[in-house]
Image (cartoon, rainbow, N blue to C red):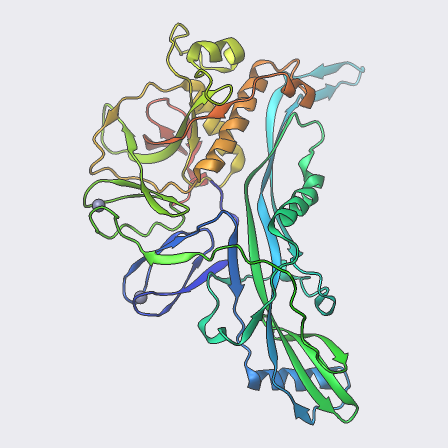
Length: 472
Ligand SMILES: [Zn+2]
Ligand SMILES: [Zn+2]
């Protein structure tokens, strides 16, 4: 739902070979040179990237001489072949959400204290953690400062480095890395006074960083310079011969991302390049496609019927039906009323035994707080939907993964719960006493939205969100 990355992905067009860069988090792109539309498929939730290095033998000599001058070491009299190593580091990012109940307190001069009606607040904090994937002595501390750079991430090893680079596999394995990451987020995890905490949209990435080692001799003997292949700067100068890196029992079970032509698997027509979109509507045969780990899977897109003017745009929402345990009975309006009654819209007919549905916006919203309110508002209203023919409607792209949408839906459930029983629902203990929810596979529902002053308003429920928070 949110945009946080400034990193770029760098690939080569599979048709014309031209280098193409686009923002990390985008899944499809149109080659600016030959107009081929390409799709990036991630077979796993864990991503893997290589960073490029522009150094070569010649420029490494130059860097080595420069370093010797700066460090006041006699200049090299003989160079040996430089060695390139790809060193692994893990990157873990996402956002941490907490819900807490606040009431404002006013203290008057005479000592009287006035407390306002409690209200539910949502706090969201993005996190971005890096840590080395290996403990090799020589390379300690090289991972410092990676965060401050804008990186170009290559899903496959840059062609000119194949056969040149030696890849050091991580000896801190995926599961350990994940545990370490969760541990490190511990500090932000337990927001004081929060009654609900959740990490949403966590992505673990393995990044290979290029490190050159330049061995040389000067009049004092043998040395080797360790060079950051990205910043083209020395990291450390060490006396003695370079002995290489012993093979470790690392692993490499993370599949690389794949770049494939982006067309309708059914009719073959090109699909639109949609940046971060994960759903695509074929303009030729009308089928809907959903990007999953193994590629595009057909998905029914539902378009809500809307009486009135046609100057609306359709925006995607994940719609979830809910149970209290896997395979248990579905949550209905009536049972929802019994549990979270006062936080639901008064307009719902409470005699209805219809299925209660959660609605999570799938399009980009820049302000997490208003995204929450919007999802909660819409879910509260339980819009009564009928569906229409899907052809010829303008649609906004859906960029929120189903799994992430489900995490949001669960938090919306707690949000609604807390809104209805404010007085006694104050900490984690209270939360444990309410039923947890499970979601059935989500549906993608497009709802009509229209500008209304500073708002973009959903036309069936009337729920609005500030227009400036919805990019594009
Ligand atoms: Zn091209
Ligand atoms: Zn098609």
